[in-house]
Length: 388
Image (cartoon, rainbow, N blue to C red; front, side):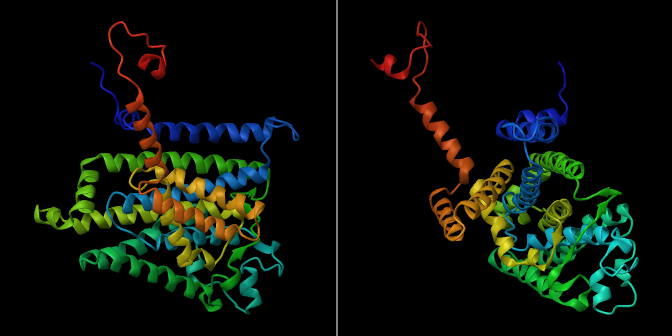
């Protein structure tokens, strides 16, 4: 008997998830193809602006996936995941700022424009090394992961759970937002980091770079989904579920609950940091607004709307909500915020298991209406014909 690989088993046992992965992989190749090959004016042509917009949605989907891992499977409702996203974004932004060199407004090859404007005479120590791409990529994962490790070690060791943990995570991102707003902190203050020129020697605003960034984002999202799926389907994942459903009982059985929670929290923070790093070169800016507590609450809504504890539900929820946001702001510029709020209220009050749960209920209802086939039955008949 042939033995299937772990990857094959993970994908084949996740029916909806493999459809989502198939769509992502198809989009990774099809979107750049339609942008490059199909002429402008053709119905099949995808403009570069739309490619960038789709890339941004995928970054948000990766962020939602990170939150679903800790909230949907381990019961850790983090209202501060936007902080990890922003830290990863700032690490990428610092690298991109160092690539500007003497092409800035003030022509200083060492200092970014905002430091020259503030009369700084030398680069702060924590900016050193960010002129190297590999160093910046390490920081994209290390900084959010280290912050999550310190925060999680203190919180989980003290057995802070539930609403108290959520409030502390919210306070964490609010404190970071206040700090990054300060000009003296060395991250551009209110304006943040922007005016990027190139990434690894390529023009960051060229069509080719934007297509490549979209492709990389889609592939990383697929890999992250598989990694999260691997964790949730392993023995480690089953312990996570038991922590979510009965933490005290799990601890009583001898599991070091805080170790499990700390690992998944750090892993999730690293994923959020990667999402932020992919987000910045595609949108062209990172500022303290990304630390805003309301951003972190919005991530929770994406996951809740899509379907908590399903992984693919988080991906779907993030894409659907952000597409709705884009559509409402264009079609109803004066009342889009009310319409989006109404959508959230309706979804959270009528869809306890999100869009994924609604789809599953509809499929179950459809199956229950279909009469069972028996010997001699004509399978081509409709239900009404059989009943008649």
